[in-house]
Image 1 (cartoon, rainbow, N blue to C red):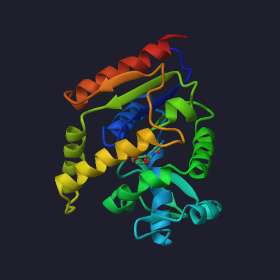
Image 2: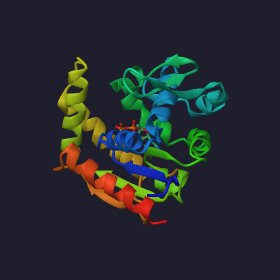
Image 3: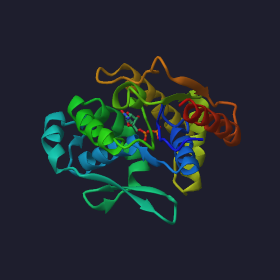
Image 4: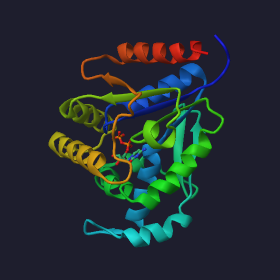
Length: 232
Ligand code: CDP
């Protein structure tokens, strides 16, 4: 195997396990893993904290005006062995995964100016390749020339169950039906928005993991990376 590095772009629906695959691939190949959704979540947390989402109404123009005040970084956490997300110097990794952020993130991610700012950061992070990034528009907009593009999906019910189990395991008090509703609503907003809607890139490979174990899907994904590395 040669030692050149590639870009792996992983897109797909909410809660389908994209980040799990991306993280494991990055660990296997010694690549950087970036969860682009965490960046939209951090912007959303900023908006919530600054009352820019009052009564379900998002103050778009004020949020756009505040973008230069929002600094997002990732720092490696040796305990969890993954990157933690920092918003203006504060570790917000836990808080951005909670339901208030999930319930407001898709409208925030429809704002073209927010997307432009995040995409710029993401492209900067990937300029030396050796990166696995997951999101909604990674293969279509952020890295249209990525050597490997995966599009991951599973049924909405299975995705909601996984997210439910994950939050329950963290001791959070959540209901399955509320999560299922959130999953379906985000699918709808993400796929129908005007700015970079979620869609499969023409050259992406589809991975429906509804009935695959983690091991099975990892084996498949690792083989796809190895194929691309052998291509050159
Ligand atoms: O973890 P999950 O797949 O549920 O969501 P996420 O990847 O954390 O992303 C949260 C939200 O951010 C998504 O529902 C999208 O609305 C938005 N997002 C986006 O628009 N573009 C990306 N590249 C990543 C996330």
